[in-house]
Amino acid sequence: MQQSPFRLPGKAALDREAGALGIEVAENRMEDARHQTALLLSGYWNDWLVAGALYRNDLDTVRWLEKELSALRRRVALRDAAALDVDQAMAAMAQAQAQAANSLAAREQARVALAANFPEIPLPIEPPETSVAMVPAQRLAAMRDLVIERSHEIRAAEREAQRLAVVAQRVRADRIADPSFGVRLFSERSGMEQGAGVVMSMPLGGGHRRAAADRASAEGNAAQLEHMSVQRTVRAIADADLSSATLRLEAWKNTDLSAQSAASALARTERGYQLGQIDLADLLYARRQAGEARRSEIMARSEAARALLKLEIDSHSLWVVHDEDGG
Image (cartoon, rainbow, N blue to C red; front, top):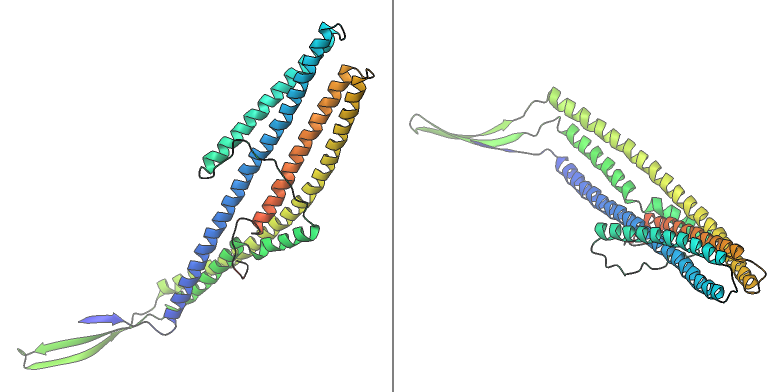
């Protein structure tokens, strides 16, 4: 005798719904993994760009000092400058060379880290210059809203909560077990009496099925709470992204103005030095101030670019292709 189970009405539909939701959860988690990878790449990329910009700035200072030191040595040979000036220039150049060496080491370390984590990306020999686009405040606010609207993390948590709710419903339905039907053939008295019969069996529910239903319901409630927690987390990320991008862009504008002022002061000091109205110590000081101001501008520009790029990635405005409904 063979018996075949018969699924009660409604259970198959719940199974299909739970399966479809499970596929959506997996797809959104895959997209969120891509999102996290994009953030990782942007971090390594920005580290390399800022290290390269700092090295170029420090190398410009070294070259300027080398040129100035060469001119000083000629002037000393012509008895037009004191040997003390050469000593001051050499000390400044040694300090600038040490800073440039540290910047070069940081640049190469950043390149190695980028290449090791993303070996498939071809890198140029020199890192490009960091650029920042001045984005209107309205556009920044719109991207902040898209961080929430297009979040695959929220969607995955939402679909998982829905899936577990369906699973809980399915487990509750299993408290009434599926019956089994079969056909029984029999032969007695050496085949003189033969017959057939229909057999049905119905398992009885018990404490195990009740406990399974309670556990599934608890898991569904926990998933709902997790969904709410993910929503709050993503909203906090969106607000932080907007605040960081806004403030970093403003800070960069201020440091850029400071660097321009320091460069202008250096140009005036150089003219005064050439006219003999300013001594070498003041010129070296102005050059050091201009170099440090430019270093501050480079780092502020990098932080602004980093914050803006994070907002663009989190809002799926960059690198991630989304479908028509914003997914």
